[in-house]
Length: 334
Image (cartoon, rainbow, N blue to C red; front, side):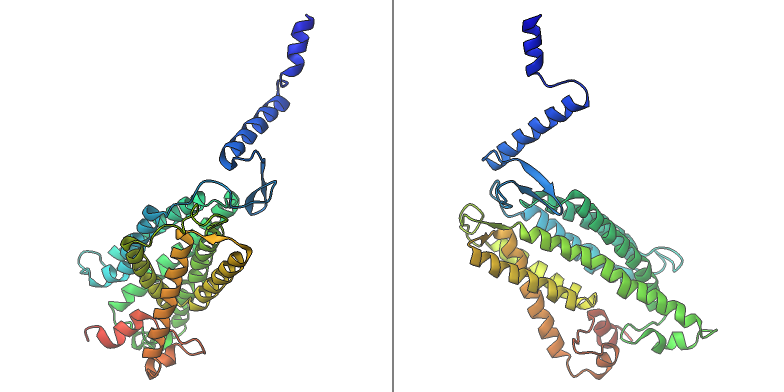
C-alpha cells in the first residue's frame, strides 16, 4: 500500500487539474522542440512570445514561392481579369439580371485571397494571435463582398452607357433618371463600392502583410535567407506582383493607405537593421514589390498630370486616376 501511495503522489492527479498538468507538460515539450532552448511560450496579446522575449527564434524561413505565386495568379486572374471578363463577355451569355462572369471571378478571389493570407500568417515565425487573424479575414470578406455587389452593378451600367471617367451624377444616363432623387441611390451604391468597401477590404489585407513582415527578421544573416542569391523567378515574381499592386493602388484609390503601409515597413526595416536584425527573402520581396508599385504609380500620375477631364473627377493633392477611367475615356470603342 505504501509503495502504491508513493507512485500515486508522483503521478499527475486525475480530473481537470490532471489534464491541465498534462497539457502544460506537452506544450512545454513542443516549445522546447521548436525553439531549441526550453523557454516556455505564452500568448501575450497580438503575438506569440517566449519568456526570453525573442520573437524570431525558430527554423529558417525559406522563400514561400508557392504562396506568393498563388497570390499573384489569384490577383491577376480573378481581380485584374474580373472587369475584363465582365465587359467583353457577350451579354447573351450573362443577361443584365444575372451575375456576370466577372462576378464569379470576384467570388473566387474572395475565397482564394483569405486562404493565402491565413497560410501566410501560419508560416510566419512571429505568430499572430489566431483570433486577430480570423477577425481581419472576416472584415476583409465583408468589405470584398460589399465591393462585389457594387462593382457588379457598376459594370452592368457600363453596358448601358455609364462612363467611368465621369462622376455618378454627371453621367448622361443618370441625368435622364426619373425621379431625380434616384441618382442618390446610385451614389450610395458607389460609396459602398469605392469607399467603404475598399477600406474594409484593403485595411485588413495590408495589415496582415505588415504583421507578417514583422516576422521576417532574424539575427543570423545566412540562417534567415540573406545569404541566398537573387534568382530569376524571384525577380519575375517581384515585377508581376509590383505591377499588380500599382493597379490595386490606382484603381482602388487607396494610394495613401498603400504609401503609409510601405513607409511603416521601410521604417521597421531600418530600425531592425540598426538593432542588428536581418530581413529574409520574404521580407525583401514585400519591400521591393511595394517600392516598384509606388514608382509605377508616380510615373502614372506624372504622365496624366495635365489631363483636365481626369483632374475634375480626381481632385486633391494626391492625384491618382483610375486605369479603367482612362480606358473608358481614351481607349474604349465609341
